[in-house]
Length: 180
Ligand SMILES: [Zn+2]
Image 1 (spheres, rainbow, N blue to C red):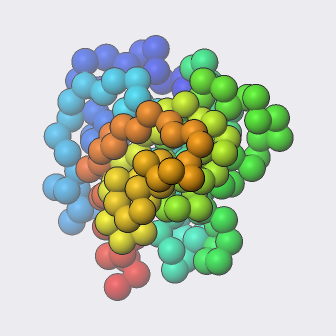
Image 2 (image 1 turned 90 degrees about the horizontal axis):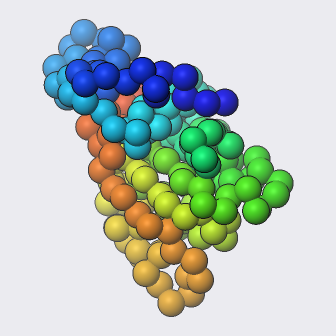
């Protein structure tokens, strides 16, 4: 699958605006103002879409999305499974049988990966990781054990955090608001 909208992205493309339309009225003010999105933000939007299409399937966990991109194409995607089962990143990594497909690949995740998912990303030797919202409680990249900085980690991707952070955080906020 390729990101069909990417070539036509124009200044003023509303990364927040797109999500704003999908949110219930009271939350629309939480969506960020419309602004220009770069390629990485467009992929993160695709990752958020992946999460949103699985909304409710991972209860009581919030749904997290992961998209793995190589050479401008999605090679794999995943969303959190039911509680006790796999997280989005593991679903996406394990969907690809040939590990060489990950060479030079970029993983986009809506939430900071946990220790197990960071390990899966490291093992797959994924080159870059972009994540949206930080997870101070369960995250293991910039929070907690900081997996990629640990001596037992043999491959650390380049990490870019807070890409589409507002949108990812809004999605999580909405999940918990509906459940309350
Ligand atoms: Zn995880």
